[in-house]
Image 1 (tube, rainbow, N blue to C red):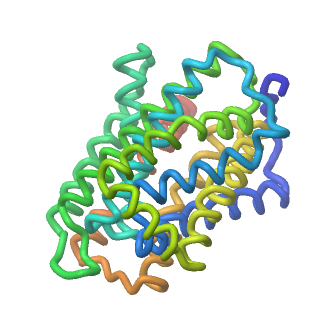
Image 2 (cartoon, one colour):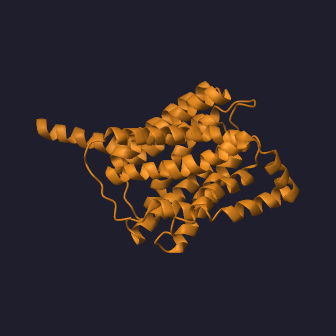
Image 3 (tube, rainbow, N blue to C red):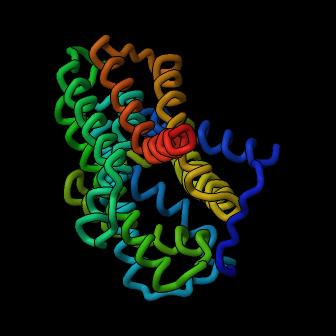
Amino acid sequence: MSALTVTTTRMSRGDWLCALAVIVIWGLNFVVMKLGLETLSPMVLGALRFMAASLPFLLFVRPPKMPWTYVVVYGLAQGLGQFGLLFIGLKLGMTAGMASVVMQTQAFFTLILAVTLLGERAKPPQWWGLVVAFMGLVVIAAGRGEGALQMTLAGLVLTLGAAFMWAVSNLVARKASQIAPGYAPLPFIVWSSLVPIAPFWLLAWAQEGTDGIIQQLQAADSKALFAVMYLALLATVLAYSLWTRLLQRHTAARVTPYSLLVPVVGLIAAMAVLGEQPTAWQWLGTATVIAGMLVNQFGSAVSARIGWRRKRWA
């Protein structure tokens, strides 16, 4: 693929449909994970998910044109780290709705890592957004309840760990784009999905043994199969490709705010499908986290516009 060509034109109807598709797919993603974990263990679900996201495409998708170090590290961080921790967190009591909110903190972890490791500069509104979002997480943690449909502290901590690993994979992808500008995203995601397959199976074998794995595979029903295919083909291959298409056509500042709608879909879907009922404190914390994201995304632009108006009327 050639270098990314970003336009400044308005989003077309097709672009809006692509953004809507990604929002819905990623929003439903957490409910689908919960459904898959009813039959499969976190490690088995992870192994099957990445097998389905990579093996069927290897015959016609060529390896990415970049050093394999980035492919391997990305596969371990995004595959084994992010999804491994998220699956375990969901299994240990993290609700699907709250997971869709907490995972968005990856943006703030990415900011901290980029400033610390890559020497990038962050504007004051970005730091204020981080502080506000952190306050929201504290409120969410304080609002955990009791019962089968309530969030546990272990689930929250593991989901935060998953968000951190997502941020690590973002940095790897950013470095890869510097080494291989304009690399094709589909080969990168397909071939990096090969990396966590063996670790997932080894962890599954260590935890459950051969008999346990065989029993899970034999007991896998249509719900488990649907979860694997959804996570692999829709949430990974399709949604990632659509999102990248949007970033190729428009600036990141225009595209990335749409990801703020993912928790909205996630919360509604979790309530409708799983019967989850967030507590009042969790709603307050969710609103605070989203407010922090809005400050992070739009704070600099708003400050600049206010400053421009003051100069104009001075």
